Image (cartoon, rainbow, N blue to C red; front, side, top):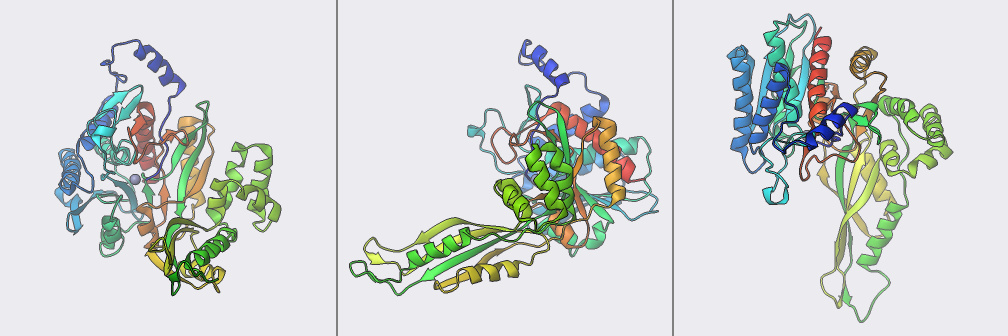
Length: 471
Ligand SMILES: [Zn+2]
């Protein structure tokens, strides 16, 4: 999933300056604590598996490797379950037993990664390397760091003899990037295996550095937009291009696409996006901050809506969007087109039914000889309300570790496994706790990496978070 990669803090900056003077083989983090060493070993082992959609056996082996580590740490066999909801699709469910005073807490991560072509990378993608203060390798950021946060801390907490007040259930998927069948199965048929009061997803949310390297926000993902794709097709009887008529499939489609481009879906806020506007306002210049605060109080304020909508990121946060992404039409250079098709990808706000969006599109293009058809229907998921008690716990943990950094809910415009669990009525909060600079993420891309210090701090944050939320 999408997250932000890390940059260096001043402390590591110093380390980097020093270590760049040393031979390249010099380890950057040579003084790891035993807990950090275990986390590094786990991350290295995970990266060594080419757990892509082309190699399901590797994904299976990665999950087995984690199961073995837990077994060696004293987790009973009964509490470690490999699930196999579909051919070649595996997941791992692990129970850290508590005294069952409260309902369980679910923890989400995934071991599968997006394909990496070694030739295009500047280092081997399936070997954990270290470079200039980063761990490098496919999956370091998305989402093998998250798997490590769970597995390494389960082992540490077990070694310390800690007993939570509730079961902690880890659900580690092997196909989040593709079919999503593990999360789909666990949240449906396998529901009794993972039934929980709420879930923390390591695969969403992030810490944000400013350009100058200050920690400016701690984002907690509380909702996701619905992904839905439509095809708009104009048809026509066609004919010879030497005798054009006024009706023309390509022209009709162009008119329809223009109608769609000129339309804006209404602004609709939920608890999370309203809190996001309020809490994130301080990060923006005064005029933008003012519009954010105004809109948070009154979502029908036209001026504030207009001003903010100019920025694509705000526009995507405030309303459902539909945009043409692919185009085809015609069959010969010298023939009137018999059909023309545009693919329109929508990202629909939680709470808005997809059918209402389809109706709106049909209304916009009506009278233009166009048919509208859904060609991809996503799974809708409600926004998860962040209760004060959980928010306050997270705020305290963030403050203890990083000082005065605002905790802000956010809505993803893309999808994670979280949507399956939300759809099944389990609130999901995305808390990767990994700091990075916006726009610096290499998840799914070349030379994926994660800041070494940011990685270890996130694992330590998760340790405290599990102890706090498991109380
Ligand atoms: Zn992911």
